[in-house]
Picture 1 (cartoon, rainbow, N blue to C red):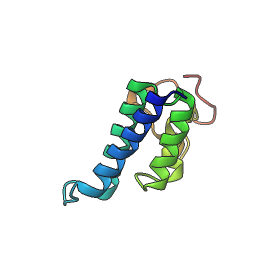
Picture 2: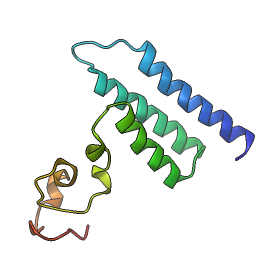
Picture 3: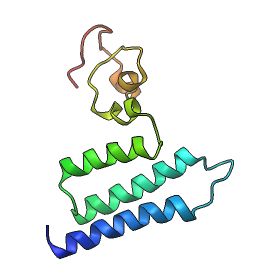
Picture 4: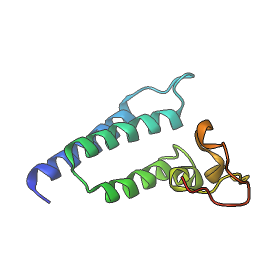
Length: 110
């Protein structure tokens, strides 16, 4: 990892920490929403600067979502699920247009 990539990674974590510690929490912006915003800014910086490989950044982002309590662990892995029609929150969330033609007992192929 080159020197610039380390600098970009430090910048991404500094923005994450800055949003978490210095941005006020209100009735409108709950702590989980503030953590999600901080992780989104972190992800954008990491992706634009290519400070981490894409696969590694995905693992770090999933870890941050769970560690900072933006969502539970099942919710942080929801984007990696291919199951449809299940009652668990991790696998049942998907865009409405993907609900069509998905049997409830079989995995989706999308």
